[in-house]
Amino acid sequence: VLIVGELLNSTRKAVKEALQAKDEATIRSLAREQVEAGADILDVNTATSMEREIDDLKWVIGLIHDEVGEVRLAIDTPDPKAMAAGLELCRARPVINSINNDPRLQQALIPVAKRYDADIIGLAMGGKRGMPSTVEERLEQAEQLINALEDAGVGLHRLFIDPIVMPVASSPDQGRAVIDAVREIKKRYGSRGVKTTVGLSNVSFGLPSRSLLNQAFLAMLVEAGLDMAVINPTDEGMKDMLRASEAILGIDAHCLKYVRHIRSKKG
Amino acid sequence: VLIVGELLNSTRKAVKEALQAKDEATIRSLAREQVEAGADILDVNTATSMEREIDDLKWVIGLIHDEVGEVRLAIDTPDPKAMAAGLELCRARPVINSINNDPRLQQALIPVAKRYDADIIGLAMGGKRGMPSTVEERLEQAEQLINALEDAGVGLHRLFIDPIVMPVASSPDQGRAVIDAVREIKKRYGSRGVKTTVGLSNVSFGLPSRSLLNQAFLAMLVEAGLDMAVINPTDEGMKDMLRASEAILGIDAHCLKYVRHIRSKKG
Image 1 (cartoon, rainbow over the protein chains, first blue to last red):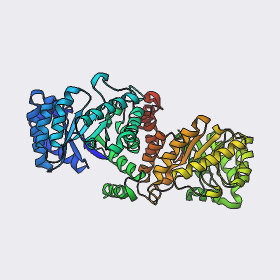
Image 2 (cartoon, each protein chain N blue to C red; image 1 turned 90 degrees about the vertical axis):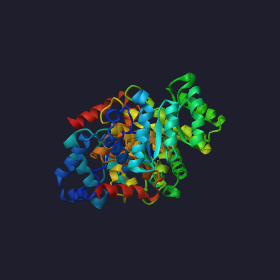
Image 3 (cartoon, one colour; image 1 turned 135 degrees about the vertical axis):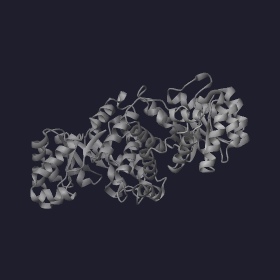
């Protein structure tokens, strides 16, 4: 399971303030901490900088490269211009975060995705149907997105479908719906290369001890076939649960990664 | 998910010694701790006492009742005579731990099960086929057991099938096989009342930080439809994961049990 580190996001107060103050040290340490904690990809979002979004995005990407070298980046923006500017600077295969069933967004982003051979997070929402609520709506949105990308000539092995995680505190059926959607997407489209991803921590919004709920959800999603998760990689409990889940499922054959992880904690 | 507390088992050194020394305090405190930790049922095993098994079983059951009152008990013995003696003393619906596809064991235990209207843990093993290795072997054993009990007039709502948990350290595919077996047993026989149970902690045998692996496995099994688990209820991480799993899946609607659990830890 690929880990996308979620901490370099301008909706977080510390990052927003660091962008405003051009505080290099904060950005550098968030990049380093996440990579050292095992993030495979770093999400970068400067969207709250508004008209300075592109300048800030370039500045952050430069700092990341300077601090940790050639790490993969997920460019996290609703603005196609910012997306193109961000992808241009990536040194390893970039991730587009995100596309959905909005035709105009697709029209703007698909050529960019193809130019950079980027991986794509495809949200199972948008278009006429808006946000999905049931498993069926998630699967309809996923199918629509898969068809659109395939018609546009995007290789489906580049696509990570995100079935849209919503808080269980407000809708108790949303955890089950996302798990079932991941399982069914993998079953229907996995052989054609389609993968799955989630913005996991949204599930626990509004509840106490959020990491515990995120851990339970992570174990279930890994079992259902999840390929990638946008999480806080410095949350030790989450990494414990990921390594333990891979050991239980035989993904981590002979539990080598698990045992190494446990030893590194004690050492 | 029903929790069967596993600590009053004579294969554990502390219990074996307490039985030998007739050490009431140890037995009483193991009973009280497990009930206070949320065990719904207490497993009682005195099998290592050999020819004194029945006497010790009666003694332990008496102490439990005296200490915590009318708790449910799972009588855990391979000996039908000890089983009958134990069930006779139960004050709340007993659990037979366990029956399997051995015809002689079935012949001896089914009349006792019916007399006390006991719940039954049915191991998916025994008979001609021995121990199961694959999902398919587990499902064959489960079907054979279901048919035998139904033919004998046992209500299937009394049956908890145990698909046999084996250590992932030696066989990496065993975790996945048990999860798939639980899901399939519930799908095939759930509407007829058949339930599932596991002796969970066997999965992590031989590996470090066993509770972490047990927690990941528990979350996955609850998602697959598990009804009962034989665990150490005083393992705080396991209870955290159980409550979090129920909240994620909407079993604990509006997360009331979860929030109460978290508050009780902080209080």
